[in-house]
Amino acid sequence: MFRFLKNRRWLIRKLCKAWGLSWAEWFLLVRASGLFLAVALGLKLLPFETLLARLGGRGRVKGERPGGHPISVERVANIVDLASRYHMLKPTCLKKAIVLYRILRTRGVAVELVVGVTKAEGQLKAHAWVDHRGQVISGGAAVDRYLPVGWFGGGEATGKRLARQRQTP
Image (cartoon, one colour):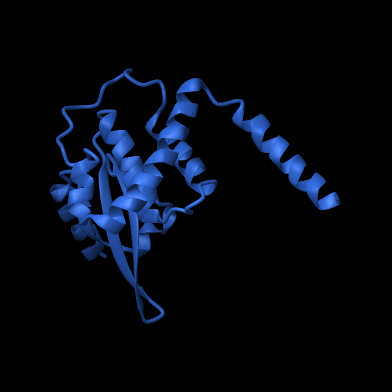
């Protein structure tokens, strides 16, 4: 019985915190949850390039719309992270990055989806993150350990710049 009360208190605390979200943030949270399902299914059924094209993320961004959306890029990243923490599929970094990439690109924000690799403990490990104006907005501080090998979103120049940065001592 006490376990139920403990879980109930946790749930009440989380709901009270969630009520502080604006309507736009709630909409974004629901949208991200739906996109996690679409991305999970798409990664199983489609080639990666095709998935990004179908999600509409491969098109050119004409430019950021200043003042067009009340939610900042960092806040969008936080909301996508929040949706991933409580999602039933427990999305990987790749799924989180694709969802955030999709949402920001449709808002007119020029972002890049970056995939990097590293060798740790004799195994090849991969990580995905989203880059905005040279700053990592999703993927954490661990991206420094990874060598970028794939850029999506027209970031070929950025990819070359990052590769040069890694070669210089």
